Length: 274
Image (cartoon, rainbow, N blue to C red; front, side, top):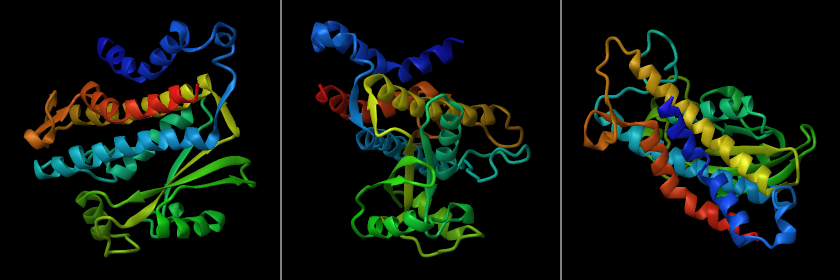
């Protein structure tokens, strides 16, 4: 239980900081009562904030865990959840785990990863998203639009081949639709969706926390999977990283690194709105 409390204290750090900001003179008295409910951010701003948090988390996981881990003999597989497979989730499946957690939460935030050359055909962009993705491939800039069919505000952000682990995995996969990926290529786009065109501070923090919780959930599931290994050598879980040997950081250490890399920019954006 103590471990869970420590991990969720990381998730709540944004909410706590915002609470202090509101209660310590950051907002005039006549605005404090409505600070949590007034419309503070456009949906585009919020989705851009959570997308940046996601970029930091995925890059850290891909490079520091998967990339360095493979050099230590750690395995990562698309079938990592199967009983006879002793491995961790590939980066795309790590993201899917985050998305699954968010979907189970009360926050109406949608997340998925798509491409024009996906390994899973179900992730192939179609219609308006396919058209917008062509523009993303040209300038790598976000695309925002309202999905009339789903009645959802939608944002697409470039997903680059930022690590050798991504390139190798996709090029060598038995079901790959493209086998000549290179570092820096635009591999796809992360797509985020939300039903409202603007969000209050409270709603914005809820979106950021739902993403952070999703990160906790999938990373802890990975660590639990390791505990069940019977044939493979288990990495030592503590405060060290794979670059130092057969080690993996605890969830607290992993998320603390994410926080250090991303929280300042997020908080700057939140506070600047006032």
